[in-house]
Length: 70
Image 1 (cartoon, one colour):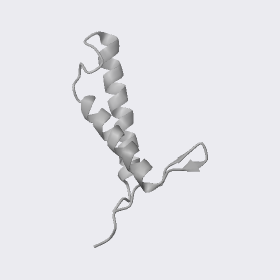
Image 2 (image 1 turned 120 degrees about the vertical axis):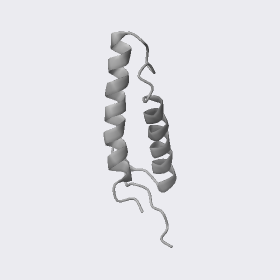
Image 3 (image 1 turned 180 degrees about the horizontal axis):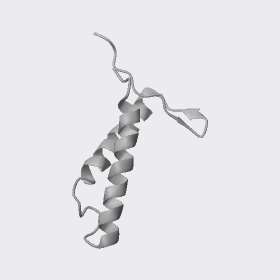
Image 4 (image 1 turned 180 degrees about the vertical axis):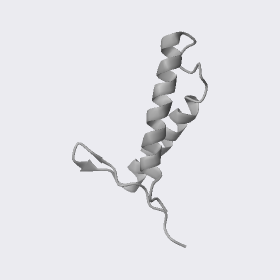
């Protein structure tokens, strides 16, 4: 069985280790799940739009983070 590996993530020139990458992935996943509630950031027009936009960007990030992860 292959050892699971996390995405290679570099922030300001510093490469995260597997535990740090995992923590970032889990945090992004958690926030993405919160953004599935259309009123997560408020019931007004601004809150609804921000919820939609955050959700879309997090979905893109998670696709990149999980691409190629075994």
